[in-house]
Length: 109
Image 1 (cartoon, rainbow, N blue to C red):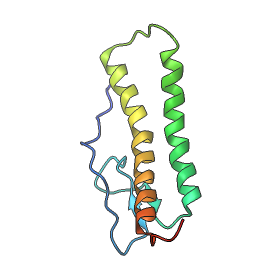
Image 2 (image 1 turned 60 degrees about the vertical axis):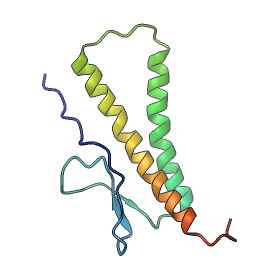
Image 3 (image 1 turned 135 degrees about the vertical axis):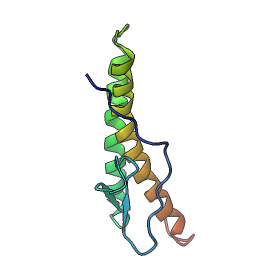
Image 4 (image 1 turned 180 degrees about the vertical axis):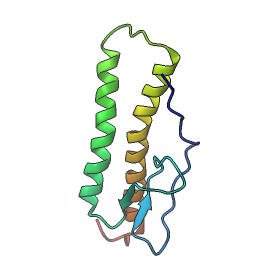
């Protein structure tokens, strides 16, 4: 069984100023195929981020309830990557939400 190659170190994506789409950092090569719409409604962005973060949280919580879990380092590495991808996507979407909220005039709520 071949181990999955981990992604390069995390770097926050910065959307091009004229583009409404920002590549997710979970893209596995230099030709991004997964994007977040930076102009999507904030509630939709929040739902997308929450879904990914909660899915990983639920898996990790269920795993922690099992007591001892035996596995080799390759399986553990692959599992960590499996958890990291949706967490990273969720963080990217939260970053877009933060940018949008900071860009609002101070009187908007």
